[in-house]
Every structure is written in C-alpha cells, then in structure tokens.
Length: 276
View 1 (spheres, rainbow, N blue to C red):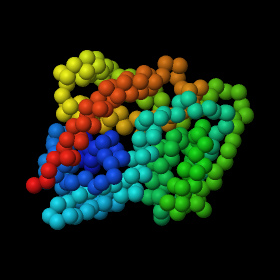
View 2: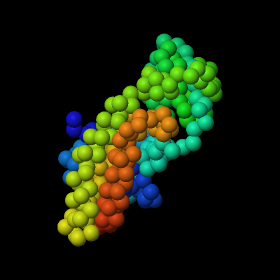
View 3: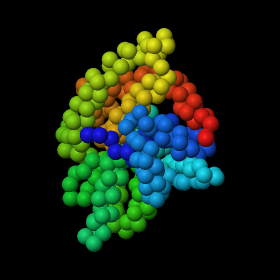
View 4: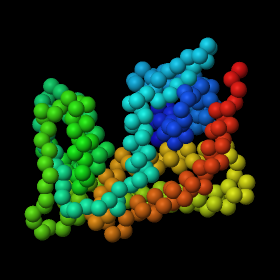
C-alpha cells in the first residue's frame, strides 16, 4: 500500500528535522520529498492541511513559506523517537501489573476509540470488557491521556499482582498478538539484510552517494517506525523464546548508523540551497 503523504512528512520531520531550530523553507521540503513520489502541489496541500490540524506551524517571510513543528507534532515525534531508539525490553520488571477499567457513555463513544488507541500506544493489552493491562509503570502517561480526553471520571486505575500460578505466557497470548509482531520483525530483517551488506561496503568506499544514503535511511525509518504502533515492548521475561525483535532492532541500528552521516550531509546541502 502506498504511503500516505502525511506519513511521509511525519517521517521527514521525525528523522531529519526534529532537532533543527529554524523553520524549514517549503522549497526544501518539496526537494526532500520529491524522491518519494510527492509532487510540489501535493506537498504544499498536505503541509497546509497538517498546519490546520495543529501538527505544524506555518510562517511567512516575504513571498516564502516556512513550516516547523507545532507542540502537538513535536510531542508525537519525540515520543515515537524514544520508542524507536530505546525499546524497553530490558526494563526491570517486578511482576506487577497496571490495570485500567473504563466505562465511557455511548454518547461520547468517539472518546472510547481514542482512548483505546492511546492505551495500545502505551503498550496496554485488552483483557476484554473495558479492562486493559500493562506491565509498565505508566501512571503519569495514563493520567495525561485522561486529562487530554477529559474522561478522568470514567477511568479507574490499579496496581496488581497475579495470584495464580498459571504460565504468564498464557496471559500474554490473550492480551497481545506477539506472534504477528514477531513475524513482522523477521520479515523486516530479511528484507533489509542485503541493504545492510551493500551499504556496509559501499558507503565507506563512496560507491553509495549521499543522496542515496538519504533515501535509503528515509525508507528504513519509515518502515521501522511502524513497530512502536504494534509492539507493546513487554519485559524480556514475557517475550517468546525466539524473539526476532532484537535481531531486527540490531540490524536497524547498524544500517542507520552507517547511513546517518552521509544522509545528514545531503539534508544540510538541500537546506542550505539559496532561495530564488
């Protein structure tokens, strides 16, 4: 399925522009997105739409337009970057669970859907009937979500420990589809292994151009950034014995590091191009 233009712009800002202080000239954004099939008109339309939605801020200087991240967009991308580059499989776990029970009235059911999306992003799994569970200490994040959605009175939160002796893997299998996530990690690693081998030799030798490094790194992060949406990042003790996430993550980091310097140099070149 072709990537949505908005998703491509999020990838560009999250990977290449998140920590740049100045707003970005729209001409540079058009040039950076052109390799991924976005026309000038499409870029301008999507940028304007994202500004109206509060993801970006639009600026003008003379006849030139510029965009930078609005607070909402920056917060989203910073959270995503933390999940991508610092997965929490090795976070110590004491065996306790964080539980949420909610009962949201039917006349505001859209808030129920938004809550479920946010809980999944935080790594919760559903036990059914409005009960969600997580091995993470996410009290502050849940409180923030409840305040944003204005549903504090419809939520109850608990810290709990499991009292029976059943295998924890049974509980995990009920709440999370780790089998599918594991298969997707394996497929990712298999797809990108040859690119890692090519770039490991080609980038130091100069056989892979800076522009190509930019495009490969863009595609790499654009595909990999889907994992924080589906991986709850459970503690290692709750993961399957043959967990492919670790190998896929190691491959991602190795290739990303090889591409980082040349790709950043290419972006600098585009951003420094004189505006006419």
